[in-house]
Image 1 (cartoon, rainbow, N blue to C red):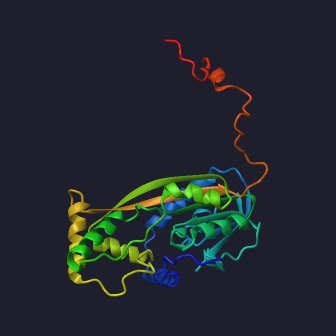
Image 2 (image 1 turned 45 degrees about the vertical axis):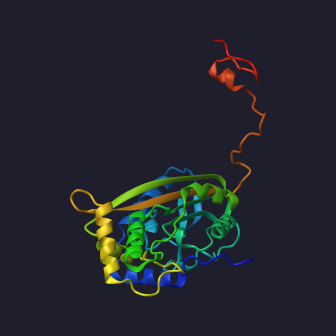
Image 3 (image 1 turned 90 degrees about the vertical axis):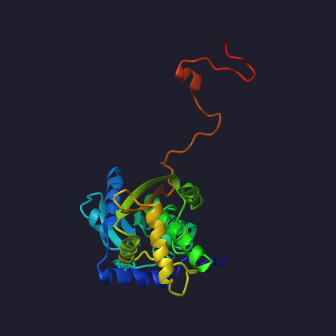
Length: 291
């Protein structure tokens, strides 16, 4: 199988996540997502004997799910989990898991379709996949401000913010990976900061700074950074002077296929007409309704 383009430097990403843990991680976002994931999973009336938390930074998801009676064993799989694992090469046997969850990790894989296929294969029939990842509008303000500042000061633009997933594509990816009953939705969070430099400092403590393979290798000029901060404040600040930062959370869920699951009806196989259900008269092709 041909290797796709490398968007992310995964080794650099792991080093930056390790640095974030050493600095004292900023966890507000992952804790918010973990709480939402626990709420969503709590609505599923199923027993999951073997579950995996895949790639989630820190212990937020495992802590949020610790009291779930519906989960037998929850295994952390990732750089600092119970099992050392890379989201791009899963170590699990086919049909061995009842549940796979993941929070704010899968946006950094180079081959998301391939990872989704591996997850589906690792699930038992009727096993559940539930994940949250950063969406395409995440940090759009920072991306725009950097682009304008670099173009003005240095005459060109280099990537500083990752091209995160588009929610409109996720349902199709789940279907291509073989999931049944795929569902996607999106939540947008706006966080306010005193300055863009405070935002960038928190991103470092999230382990979420630029890990693009095609990132700029030379330090930014101070003039470019200062101009970026000025543009950010001009375009994306509130009346009190604080700047806004968008975090778009894309939610994915899907089930490994099983014969017990609901399936769409074949066209023409309905046993009752819609017109009868609505108490109206069906109008045939070419027939004009009565005025």
